[in-house]
Length: 448
Length: 91
Image (tube, rainbow over all chains, first blue to last red; front, side, top):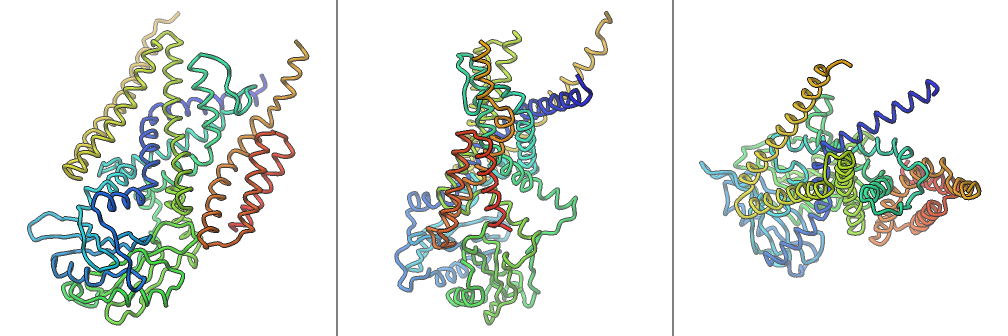
């Protein structure tokens, strides 16, 4: 064998080892993220359905055509003078309600985030719910940080990085593993290891680009707080208006929301307003956030800041006019969640997203069946083990969901934190002990 | 036996199977998302450019059929066609 061919062979062995070990140790995380991600792309649709069906909150037709909510907001402010933040989400379709997301900080009490539903036709409050205990919040928090408050987000980022590594190494070893096999032919055999291996290779290569994009954007979104600190990257679009009055006076100022929407349309015609928020810090401003049709950027990233006093524009952020670095920064979340092409694109994202879950399960089965071939494991044990791991993940997801919905977010977060950190310590401890045990055995082997 | 082996080798072109098909599948992933996005934009009167819908649908048909037929020249042409469209569309 020539020196070059030998080097190429060594590289392939290294890629295969990386694919094998990274997949084995992070497969369970990738599988869980794949499942939660496939559901998370439909959060707005699921939440809209729950609000309609469970809370029976619907909007009647508006007499003016536009959403009416000024009186409801005004009455909310008077009912809850202790509020510390107010954000209004406008409906995407007719019949949907306006959401007023209010953070209440009662003196001596715990912070509470309440989501009020407003009939956008009659301008009436028709219901409310605890925002943190909602299913929409569960789905988002589970996918974004596994419900773990300390480093859950970073763990998800590491999962994204691991998926990128297994996807890229999978591509590099693809030719070696396919040999004379044609894509997308499955070998005719009853050997489950070969059947799973064929599906693993064919689905893996077929959804590779999608998985690489999801993996890299997910890694960035998860590791963003660390990476931005280390690389000294500044968050784009962080405008802070000057403080011009007392916070209490700011909170008490009346806002004509219809006038705000009219001004936004005049000052920023391309903006589709989706979220309105009123300042409470003394800056005396109203922020209108929204999308620009046909653009692939993070939701509600374009904004217009208006003065509460005379509705004069103070600041405008149009992502189309920004530098490439801003555009690159804000394209990540849109590419990760696929919310720029309607329901069809979401369905495609969910379908392709589930491939990484299948790949982690099939990879694990192949690993166990190969061990069985080496007579270390029984065939039934391989399936039982896979079943137990898959059920454990499902039980974790369902258990945390039930705790979050029926007991509360903080309890669910505490339980998830304990479980995840115990598992993490166990996994790292096991890997370390295994390594030390092998090292010890190698050093104490009797020489031939 | 030699004839059967020769027939199999003729059917199995390593360069196509190990490099061109994965590259085409990679582009097909991107193209699938691109087509859905453009069709959505067209039907929601955002882009309103039927030309892009037609060009990208053609690219999708060409690339998928090229992957199925596995003709080396056809694969290269359909990939180049979509890469050109992609560059023109985004840059």
